[in-house]
Image (tube, rainbow, N blue to C red; front, side, top):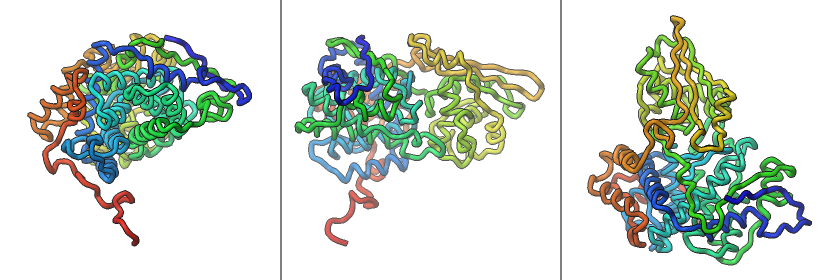
Length: 508
């Protein structure tokens, strides 16, 4: 790895592009080496993972809305939409919009946590959409996705966004641009300009994940993917973008991050190095914010040991991030409200623990129904739970050694009879360092479990077999990398007529 110092420079310094982070990101996209077999296998795993959670969410309102918007932009030879027949094609940027929204809706796909938070798998939808529209093969697609992960992980390790109340997708947009640039084998100058534009437009506030969380949380990756595609398209036409986008005196570090005196160290691979960062990322066995994963596993263990009705108090000792994002440290009353949105509940460790302790399981639908949230015993237990930041858990969260990082906590349950029962998890069972690290059969099992009864068995096996051969697929195979649901199962399968894009032509 090469350590790049990134800081603000005055305009008078005329910082050369070769010294700018956006140029170095573009260099990785241009120069990344061939993909190792274990990385290619993990890319295939994440393609299956994305399809699984997208189909499980296929008719939820945000997904249906995004799909209706996309279907208003048909394009022969474009990209496919999850669940729809292969002859239904839309412009690549709208396929990215709809498909990334479907993947993100249930908060159930891959994650990476370091200085900031990330869902690196959000870049797969735009990269795949462009691959379909431009006729790329599987080997090229796999390398492009691996490059997007490489950039995303590097930025998340180096630059904290949430400390400045910026949403974490500001790292997703340049990563997606890098992946698309690698996919199309674009010149470094073109990728550089597209990164500048994408970063310039990708910054938004963390209000999207604060208080009452709305459906926009699901749409943000689609917005980012669409932005990345449009930024690349514009740069390919020879247009320039604002810069230096990170280092400029009125740019993002100076005014949106740590300020003019800040120094960030971003470590990127040497030219020619094979991209391997995807292997540091991890998926979810449970449909909830990632920092709840290990605690759900611990709660399932506690379910077998205690009677929830006998609980006096529960204290969760955990990291700064967990306490302040999904715990009582957030000071969000919505996290204790039975009428809160699903998006809010999946960011409330108090609610999640109450349900997991009572049920001993976690389900992407049943655990979030209004009836489940309003159960009197759950509400009573829910309000007995609080979190506290423990310095050791915060330190472990930020460990530079992936083998020592911890994203869990210690759950102390004080019972009314005075006894205390404890469960602790450093990482989720499915994490690479967990009790049962996930491999290809687990991802396939997740796909089959989430799509059982919704997809024909033969179609499910066709998709899984295709994904398993991802690095060897030709362009036609890449275009078929979409599991199709039975006719009528996807609603709406055509524009709804409810938005501007579907407005009848003419005046009136």
